[in-house]
Length: 120
Image 1 (cartoon, helix red, strand yellow):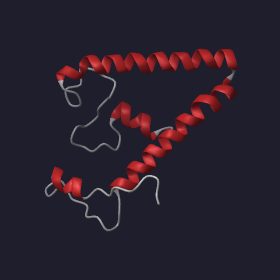
Image 2 (cartoon, rainbow, N blue to C red):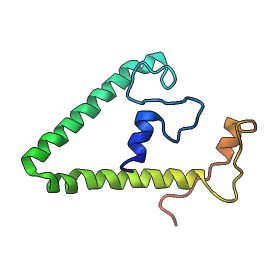
Image 3 (tube, rainbow, N blue to C red):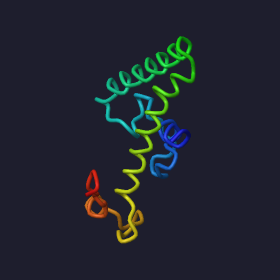
Image 4 (spheres, rainbow, N blue to C red):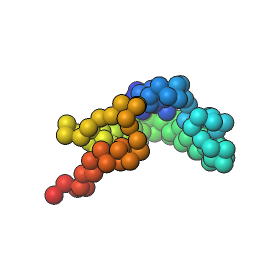
């Protein structure tokens, strides 16, 4: 959560070898984004930078402990839940795993386990 998610966004770590090293913050990346998304990616980048700057400034004003509890702990909690939920949806011992030669979008869709939320 602290290293893996940023590593994936910055370098495509664990994203597979097809696209190589990718960066989700570069609007001109033709490997990740169609041309019409460039503006949206740029706006997203501005939002990320603005948020990080705001967190930095609030840390200076209120202290690291308070910002850790009010921002970073919820951030980690949400990201933990997203990673766990995604992992649970895409892995199951009874579901086949396909290699690159046999995988298709349809097979991938049928090999995903949708779990009820919240569990009954």
